[in-house]
Image (cartoon, rainbow, N blue to C red):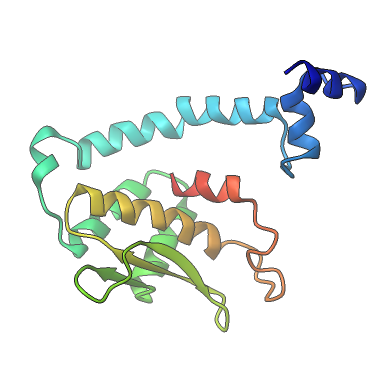
Length: 173
């Protein structure tokens, strides 16, 4: 710890975390900006998410409920309408163009992921899950990646190459 503090001080940083944010992690934001962002999430979208999620899904009786695929998309639709219109538009892009493969069973990949059809520059969601709250949570997570990919720069030589993975996970959670 002392060695790292000394290194940071040699380069005029207050602490090693600030030094790493600019020189090691390859991030495009400072620790102060990260703290401000977290505070905004906590007081803004985080509060809205908690209220919406409680209203739509997480009532104690719903914890054992199964959701059809249509019901999962309906929950996301109701939930995303309260945010930036681009998020709700993204959901309609996903559903209208059927840019997903969601199901479970033998012969399916064990995990879930979002990828891109490079010929069309369109993201696609693949999910192996059941119809429970866990499956809804997986859809919500992958939908975040889908939305991020949908609005990323459409450069075939750069798609995801210089992606900021911190930001990609923020969108999905």
